[in-house]
Amino acid sequence: MSERISREELVKIYNIEITFFDELVNGGLLNVEMDNDVRYLLYEDLPRFERFTNWHYDLEINLPGLEVIHDMLSKMEDLKQRNRELMNKLSAISENFEDI
Image (tube, rainbow, N blue to C red):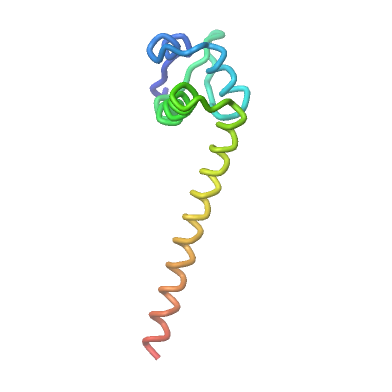
């Protein structure tokens, strides 16, 4: 079983509203596991949770704003990956032409 932390523990530790956590889950920004009617967040998802919490409470970004930012950052990461792939292909093609 993966390491995880309950929603109730997160609310206490981070001093956030339980409704905020639930909104993140309902908005598809966080994935949780259920066990005996208790919601758990996997430790591997803690950085994402912390980022959303900081943006919301420190920068006062609302849930729709968090969704937009998350979507844009995901798209940027996809574009970076695609760019790396294309650069690697270009490099390989370039090396082949140098051999001719």
